[in-house]
Length: 188
Image 1 (cartoon, one colour):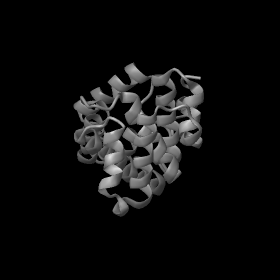
Image 2 (cartoon, rainbow, N blue to C red):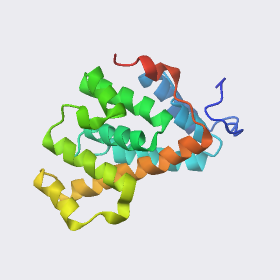
Image 3 (cartoon, rainbow, N blue to C red):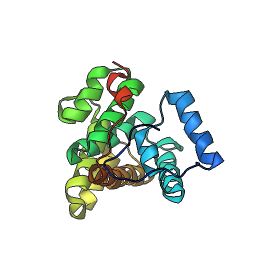
């Protein structure tokens, strides 16, 4: 770990616990990098474990939302919040999962111009509403999602992913988290 993942002076635990070192090695093997967000949390292994547990549950566990849809929510929320780290990292994920570099760019810049299904547009509109004015959500907003084909469990998952990224965007922005340079060239 040569360069700092954030502007904060929070060196990683040294040595990393074996489980953490093994997890980082797995990331390196599967992704070719250790994402800076993980490196940023490595100063406190309990916080890192809590972050990864929640991320893995929301983004990888079984859900009525596809992995691509969850990544789209991550990008759109991060775009609303202007979170540099998450726009770059999750924009790369949208490009990779969709096989469409233009879709990844549209998600970062302005999802409203992207060729989305009515289901995806309703999902992303709801994620933006939660990001901008969560206290204004009403039953009619949830009904729009139901009418688009989402179950109540799906609505909970949309809200959970949007809520998680609203939190992590703020941590990434406050700490000056830098995206791994490799993300910029992925899936183009």
